[in-house]
Amino acid sequence: MPKMKTHRGAAKRFKATGTGKLKRSKAFKRHILTKKSSKVKRQARPGVVMSPSNEKVIKKMLPYL
Image 1: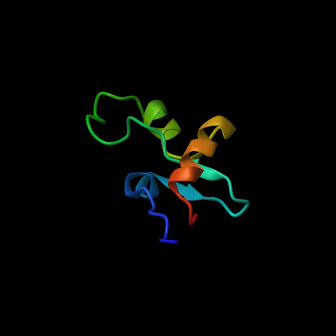
Image 2 (image 1 turned 90 degrees about the horizontal axis):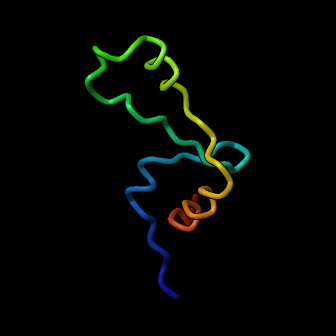
């Protein structure tokens, strides 16, 4: 049987936590930051644990995570 391929786009966007949950970063933090308030930028900083319904789909894309 050939090896399964990892979805490279998903691999760059998601990381696994120690317990096996998936972590993602928040959106709207890349550019045009001058007009965004400090609060918005601060709240976009930390990673977030994904919801279980989305996690199932992403885990299929990342078989070796």
